[in-house]
Image 1 (cartoon, rainbow, N blue to C red):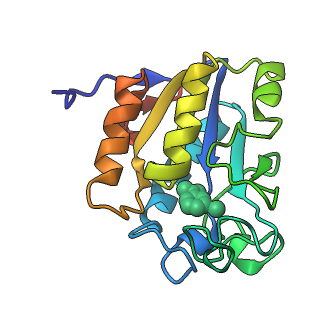
Image 2: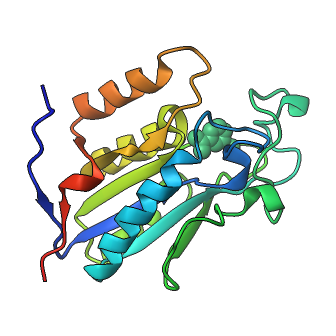
Amino acid sequence: MSSHTHPISLQTGDALLIVDVQSDFLPGGSLAVPRGDEVIAVLNGYLAAFQQARLPVLATRDWHPSKHCSFLPQGGPWPPHCVAGSTGANLAPGLKLPADVIVISKATDRSRDAYSGFEGTELDRLLREAGVRRLFIGGLATDYCVLNTVGDALKLGYQTVLLQDAVRAVDVHPGDGARAMGQMLERGAMAVTLKQIRVVS
Ligand code: VGL
Ligand code: ZN
């Protein structure tokens, strides 16, 4: 169906948004996403392209206070993860982020969770100020924070490009990741893989 690959040239107004690629979401972490580590090498490919094109790079991070409402001991659905300032909350050390990466902390309020990088953050304002119109989004996890960040990006009017080779799902219920992919495309996201990306000089 969408297996033909037409090239996508990076241009002014594009930005790369990396969602929650943090140690706790990688194998060995407290909320490990199966094969979550596989996104790192692919994201490094996108990072190289965006840096070569001198385009903005942003990264969200889940940045919870201790005893966050989403944690199991507090009655939430998840094991404690990404506690602000902890090792597990670090962005993956293997990610080759530029020195001027813009890091957005989210879900920092103890009493409410936020899966979208836009929820309760300055992300939309920062993107508008930077003149961003098309947002390339990848990271973790497909069925939670990527799904909700892509959904909000579309609602806010960004052309939204899902990096389909640089996302992995929690898949609490089998098929959640595949369903989330379908929903994002249905809502208007475009899916790409790294080999389609072109940097025009
Ligand atoms: C996430 C579960 C809990 C995510 C964050 O980044 O997708 N998932 N907190
Ligand atoms: Zn979380």
